[in-house]
Image (cartoon, rainbow, N blue to C red):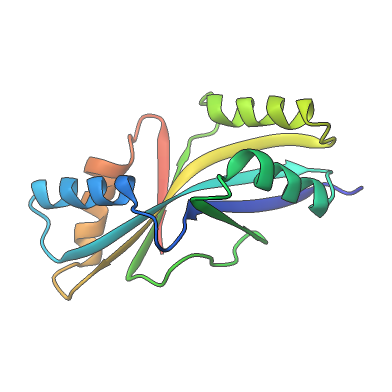
Length: 158
């Protein structure tokens, strides 16, 4: 099977409280950023594999997401997923930085009998909503001061 890149997003179900999102929102307020109304956080995975879509679905359903409290979405690279928001921030480890979570997922996937896993990168995705006071400049401040450690992480804003 030809190698393919899968993008997986794991987030809390609608009726489940998002403690990471609420903590991030409080940190933004503590930083003095005005205009933030809500923050939702998802775990994101970039999986390079020669595995079948069914094997990736098995990995997501049995390992990456809790079926009671979470849901997962599989998307082609570049396709938008998740709730609508004013800003979407993705935070990833820089190339060369050890991704211990990604390595653990690789090992667990192989232990589950999923063949063809080549590389797994993990990150966080923030959906930030706010009013007109929440500007792109403020989002850059939030990213550089709260969400990403510039020594080991990169971030993109959309």
